[in-house]
View 1 (cartoon, rainbow, N blue to C red):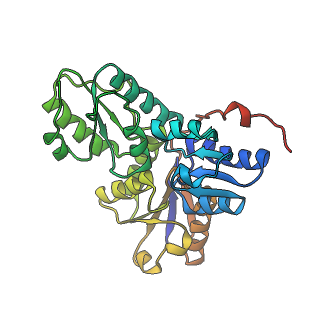
View 2: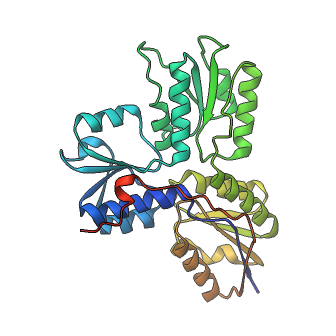
View 3: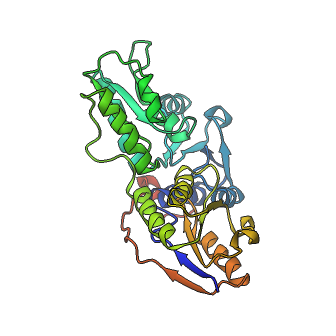
Length: 317
């Protein structure tokens, strides 16, 4: 008889809640179409449901016709994108997660003060691209450097090792990031970091919860899309703790063969995956004969981020 254990916390965080609500409110108040630069959050189900309501997801601002409204995704954008939006007089609502904005401000401040900034993150991720684009200096050399692994630290070419700072992508694995920070401190003893860790509270809480889940389960299912950084980290963490784990967009991705000989099935969800998908996974497992669902008590999250002022009103058409 298989038991289902639910991680807690799981699913939506405050930044994702806010980003989705910004798109929904903009559609409600201004009507379709509303353009969104990049997926507002990395979840296929969320993006599809917003698309059906009239959101148009674009890769770049030149895909947005003049005079329209554009929303920047929760992952944030570079200064160049902001400047282009204002040059083209696009109406902008910024759904950047406030915890990403905190990293952006830190990068901009360090660059203004003449520092080289090291960003620990995943190459090609929209959050990384946005953060890399916060360093505005008049000389042509780049003062922000991306490192992905501890090995990358050895290859860094830094002008002044006395003036160097690091920041991190908000959705990384805490354990992996610690190794890179250690390598940086070893090579650059004068390096300074953020006062508070950049990895966001929700990422940390979900990672702690999945570690606990993995220790009690024979298999972990992580509900989240393949392009979601924090969901991928949850799957990796479960596997590092010796438990087979799969990243699934929804119940249709579960293979019944995974469940052969399994007693305890752990279920969690990345920060951009809605609870309705978790429920459908549980229902599917119950159809296949799992019986009991037990929820971990976990850490309560009470963080709420406010909406942009123009969207926080209750006016409807």
